[in-house]
Length: 296
Length: 228
Figure 1 (spheres, rainbow over the protein chains, first blue to last red):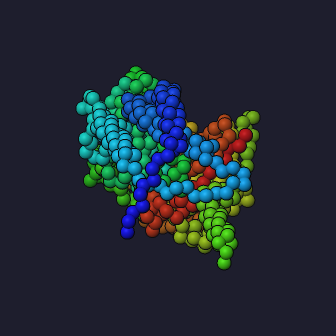
Figure 2 (cartoon, chains in turn orange, red):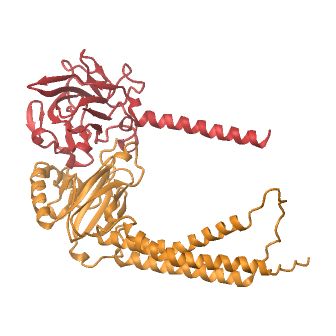
């Protein structure tokens, strides 16, 4: 069967094409720097941690890249709606059949492939740079600088509350998450029952809390601040209530708080820190709690 | 059948299913799971004082629930009757004296840290009249916890060799073996709704001990409705 010849572009088609391209270029040239300058810094999660700041930058880059695409769609559809609108009582007739154009196809493939490959490379670099605030499982591969001297905190999820253990403070546990400012923190996230997700919103941290799994996430704190902690995994009836506030405080304030909490914790410490063969909780000494202990 | 009629029927069916699912979810997650009980308030030296008397039982029994083997909290009303009501209206800025009679055995805490009483006056509780500032996590039968208020305490269980164990509710304080826990806490000055729950995985037969009565209002969890 003989194929139909490709419809040639008419002078009118070229006129419409030029108008759309010029309008798109002008709009993109105006909107892209405006978005990058005035929107980028306000994209969540904010600049409360080095990882959060990195995410703001990533989101700003992606939003800036997205802007010309959105501009093209707006201009094209706007132009089409206005220019090709049928007039009242005008008979609606189908347009000429669309035929391929190799130049357009090749240009489209080059532009989209370049964009996607750039984003893949950019995203991979950003992830591997310092972990980007995401849970990396028990054997992390992306570390922030000075991670070997990181301050350790264990986040323990259970239906329906997070508690926080400080191994370097004698295994002290608290229902408040307090972190020292300007420090690298190594957070070990786990669960005692179902799957939860530890999300420190303004710090840009999110790590799944799986029973029996030690999910490690790094964060580098900056100035003192307050942040929200939420469970980001539907975990049962009271999932919506599984939240509290955390704080990043100055080193001195953190030391005072830790000394006070250790006193509060002292009465339960003999039970918690008992050796496992004497009825103590296994996760008093390890980051791998037995998930089914005392299940009904 | 015309296409338009079919579309309307499909939309109606989807809407009806959505409403039914919504009612089911709201029954579980809102106050509809239990009637709200307004705890009587006394004035002592110009301050609001509330006495809350509760009991915890291993099985609610056929008299009080259609799920007779579910573990549950009960509250004693002004007539001295035990009711399965776990949503309580309390005044703001009030002192609440709580007495819990526990008739259940120990299950053990999943997180031993929760054996440390905290958030109540003095950060300690009375167990059978004696002050305690840590409950052995393995002896915990239940907890009473209001996470938003930082209030948590573990409730020790009745020994396994008790001579007069209570099989199901309502249990008798004068006849059945029990543990008596007392503590005092203050309601916040700002009104609000605060959920409370048990942290011991004590729902026998459910996945991880946390289904059924642990996730249904009117048994092992509820709300404190703090009102101005």
